[in-house]
Image (cartoon, rainbow, N blue to C red; front, side):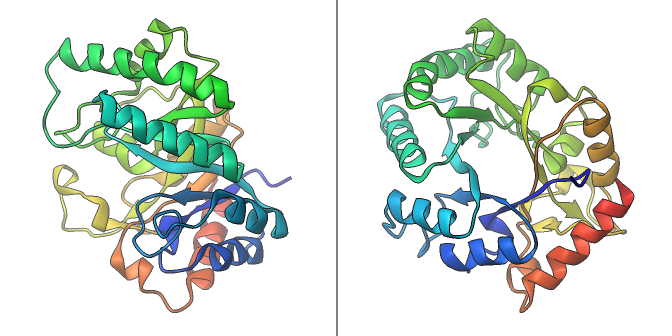
Length: 270
């Protein structure tokens, strides 16, 4: 088995239909994918049935790691509960193993005490829903200064407060980890790693945003290779999922060639 197990998030090639995304993954020797609920004109938003996604994954011999994502999960209310129920049902129907949980990122809910309580409340509400469906919740702290959950340490505290280690794990996103400046890895509690690089030499760390996120190459400023080495050394044995948001990646005529180059670079470095 290769030391690095790669996966493919639909954000790596968002214009591809699900069937074509799955074919791209298998052409690269990738056996695991993440699907999304935020791509207009594509599954899931286009009404594609979960059974259709499950059948396509089975045809291509793929594991669906996650649906990405329940947004604003730490702002718990009736609307969020309905969204969670719908996504958990979809995850179960399509065979996805997990649901990514993304915190609100609009500058609200950041006060000390308030944000921890909101987080615990949301995890406590989600736990029985996820457990009943056999779906893992993947908590993804975001590194942005305006985010209501930047720290993985804070996420772990909340998971432990609701006795949730059998239900919840962390997403280590190399971009967000770099922005947050948090040194602890929590490899034992990490269920998934998202990888993307930033190559623009002019943008400051504080100004880095999703559109700067490209495929990882030698000019990467986030030290993806170093983060990956550290995670593996600390015991992480799961997949590293490509999640670039930059338009120049999404507009590539040959995404397979670019992804293969990034896979080769990281495999050699890690």
